[in-house]
Amino acid sequence: MTTPESSIPSNFIRDIVAEDLKSGKRAQVVTRFPPEPNGYLHIGHAKSIGLNFGLAIEHHGICHLRFDDTNPETEDPEYVQAIQDDVRWLGFDWHGKMFFASDYFEKLYQFAERLIQKGRAYVDSSSAEDIRKRRGTLTEPGTDSPHRNRSIEENLALFRRMKAGEFADGTHVLRAKIDMASPNINLRDPVFYRIRKATHYRTGDAWCIYPSYDYAHPLSDALEGITHSICTLEFEDHRPLYDWVVEQADAPHRPRQIEFARLNLTNTVMSKRKLLELVEKNLVSGWDDPRLPTIKGLRRRGYTPEAIRAFCEAIGVAKRDATIEMAMLEHFIREDLNRRAARVMAVLRPLKVVIDNYPEGQVEELDAVNNPEDPGAGTRKVPFSRTIYIEQDDFREVPPPKFFRLSPGKEVRLRYAYIVKCESVVKNERGEAIEVRCTYDPETKSGGPQAGRKVKATIHWVSAKHALDADVRLYEPLLKTDLSKVPADHDWTLYLNPHSLEKLTGCKVEPGLLKGKIGDRYQFERQGYYCVDPDTAKGLLTFNRTVPLRDTWAKIEKAQQEG
Ligand code: ATP
Ligand code: MG
Image (cartoon, rainbow, N blue to C red; front, side, top):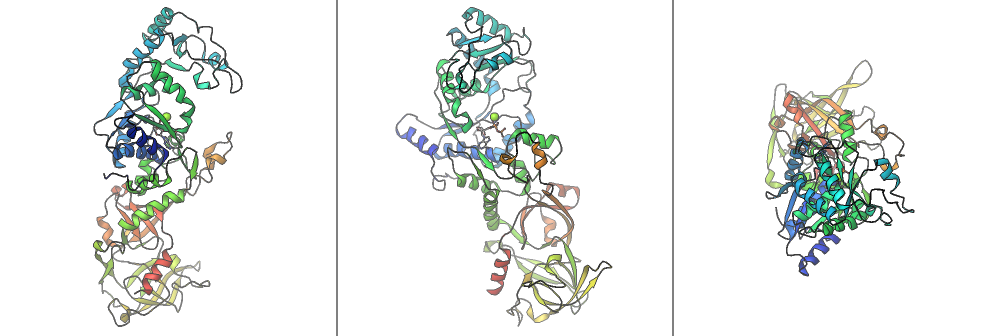
């Protein structure tokens, strides 16, 4: 990947890092992306990935991929694999620096013994409930545990017995001995170790005590020589604790924690807990459901890593939480696909059109432009014949005002083909148009004497006997509203948008799409960007709509007028 200096707007974190290098405070940049393998990555993680890996690339440093795997109950190797795939797919490389917090369990344990020996940690045998009660509130100080003044020897002995598995879950914890009256609640003797007789996906049953995030994270950073430990804003109040842990444990390095605002998007969910709930309750088809903001979901939907990276860079890095409009993400995928997606014609809701004066059995191979934004993309042949399909929407028996597409007695241009005129309509017993009869003007073909003849609209079509059948899935926002507007006591899943997925069957697409491979992205002319879904492997071409087009009409009509 190229160095992103020139394209990324500056931000306060980049400034801090640059300053630390300039002042000589740091000799190099070592960052890390520290996911917990308890779910799949989402676009919020992409922001963190872009920031951490981006800083490393910019300063020829390194960004570690570290699995923060200290909760045995929720972690799974499936997630470890998926996270690696996603980071790579986004275009980043950890250059072999992949680590696991669980690899540090022994070292973390040794640091804890050292804290006990320094009188900085103690074993509390109070219940979780009592510990919570004594913590105090934002306005009232906490109170000391009756076990707070145990001797160093007693603490060491108890802690070793905790490790040896002599006690049941919840009977003892190891706590930092800081200050129960601190105005910062995080400093009121936070818990560093809990007993949990659970099997860890990597360390098995080797451990029955597990470190807390507040303890394991700073020390993992320190052990890896992380220079800048970038995390989200909710950890700002934990920073004094982060510094305390690193200092008191006499850790080999002093990383600097810097917080930034997490990414939130409108009308979707971004917490792994909620994403997991959707997956487990089968409210979506899986972690890669194209409606989800997971990296796997966005990828299946047709998003490109380039668009996601560009979006993350554009939203910037700030110190204040904000919710970004989904429209902004869509803007970036449109921009990217506009440059790279091949144009094709696809009819989603087909209406049969018979061109009465076109010779029966004749097929013409017409030239169609693959991508007007990319002359190098060339042209392709599209078959034209007497019976074609157009979009139901492109025909109105009784046209409303300003409807310039097909209606009785009116003309329209068929993209890359002829001008046709609607002569009559065939209707079913319910009075719906099921077939339109037209005539064509042979002189209006490209290169023909009347090629430049103007009509008000151009529509897309596919030749009936050459078209391929396809299923197409259209998506709308996952949620009807933003979660921030949902009262806390409401079941948030009731706010799911019942129309978030619409499945169209019997769609007709041009024959060239037969060679479409899973993941290939196209622009369906006048409609939007679509990509080939993995379900195609089941035997029927299946597409996901990545994003609809905007301003389609204006564009096509303009191109038409320009000839
Ligand atoms: P979630 O809230 O989705 O469960 P998390 O913070 O618990 O996320 P982790 O696996 O711990 O998930 O996150 C790994 C890294 O990604 C952390 O450094 C975290 O700060 C960052 N991160 C997570 N969510 C976002 C977000 N929405 N925006 C920016 N960074 C995020
Ligand atoms: Mg987390």
